[in-house]
Image (cartoon, rainbow, N blue to C red; front, side, top):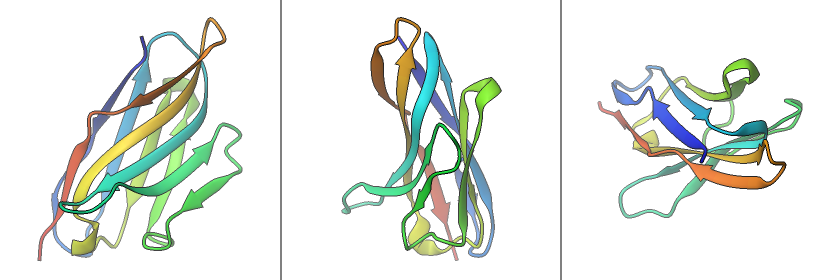
Amino acid sequence: QVRLVESGGGLVQPGGSLRLSCAASGSIFSIDVMRWYRQAPGMERELVAQLTSGGSSTYYADSVKGRFTISRDNAHNTVYLQMNSLKPEDTAVYYCFMNIRTRSLGYEEDWGQGTQVTVSS
């Protein structure tokens, strides 16, 4: 079974930066899609950023475009979300998601446990 473990959340002042990490482990052949979502209290889950396996296709929500950057480290099966110029509106629990091709050449969709990001004035 593939497992995703997130880290990097915390408390930061407006204008500050954080880098979230999500590392996958298990029976992994390749990771085709990596995504970051977030969910604020009372709000629906929002897709923040997406990166495909080729690394040339990215997506960002309008609310974070120009401030957040998604990247991957293929050697460590890890996806990152670099968050700059953070705003109080960015406060949420952030979740990573991966569409993974397993070593048996099946597919598996997995979620991280979530990490809290709080941007406080």
